[in-house]
Amino acid sequence: MTAWLSADGNILHIHIPMQLRRRGGKKVIITPDGAVPEPGTEYSMPDDPLVKALVKAKRWQTMIESGEAGTIRDLAAKEGVESSYLARILRLNILSPAIVERVLTGNYPDSISLERLRTGIPLDWEEQGVKFGMEHDDFSLRSK
Image (cartoon, rainbow, N blue to C red; front, side):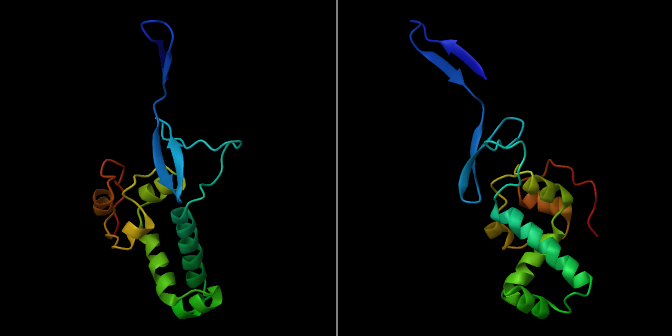
């Protein structure tokens, strides 16, 4: 933050470096260090549809792997959703750890959205980084 007075000394100018971004239909302030301040809380999970979708994807994958649901159709019926929706959400499990971490912390580029993810997610994590505008992030762990 910088502050200065106008030449005549009547106006105080204050410059606060920040960006406004949309997250879950709301505008939030992103500070230079990438933090998303939440009023009145030290830390809280972002109220973001993408975060909620990632959580569902992980939970549903666990339910299938544990045998709690035999098929996507069984799981969709159990969860009360369409099987096509469930299958689209399950695809989020192939996102790279770097992208998932940025989404969960609320510090991801506008190029990542549920709508954009519906256009397809490359299997290779480096390709994901390029497609979603995060090519400078750490994608050193290779997808198989």
